[in-house]
Image 1 (cartoon, helix red, strand yellow):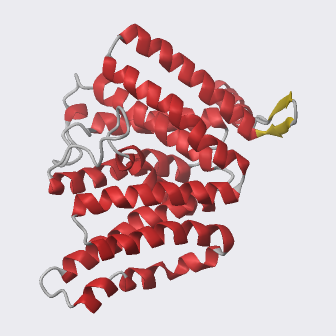
Image 2: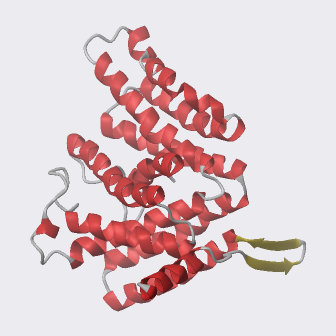
Length: 306
């Protein structure tokens, strides 16, 4: 019993370590002097990308090399806006949401008017989260207003379907990504944890496939999403959240379970559209929606549970 208590004490000590680190950089007129967790996250990201790079080189698999190169490009583009502040995080969320709703509109074959509604909401939701978060409570009203293009256009044949897809996209993409602002300053932490958990889920699915129970698919939508992958996601989320010093039961559920089922949700849409990926411009991943599908469910869950 004493050994267990000692291990728990050591674990809690590690979780509650001060993870703020200094960064002092002077180059001509550029002066950066920071002492924050963001610096710690930056170094952890750089270290893991370097280790992953070594593993990718050893594997010699072209698809893994392609994905690693994309990650090296994505990390600073996504990371710096979130490290700077809420305003830049809102701008990042808006850009991500606009690109994602365009891909979503192609998947669901939405009319131009419906796509315009989603693009407008993709910008308005993150701005509202930054400037007046209470406006997000109007999301149910916005859901109903998504039917306006169909109603005003008198679309009897496809109006209900268009309205449903537009309303779903407004919540799944626009409203969800606005929580990138709502969870700030932990936005990058969550994005990092989700990315690492995706890798852990893949490892769990591959590593446990010799066991019959682990090979069982979670849904017919995606045979590759197995119980073993879910176990890997839970273990991976526990490890990464412990490393980052921010862990709770709610956050563990949000990152692991939310991430896996967020991926399945996009698989349902892709199956209906009969396509493999939502896009083809992001090397190694397909489209942006293919990369952030897990995050879309994790963000609101983390806000409410974490």
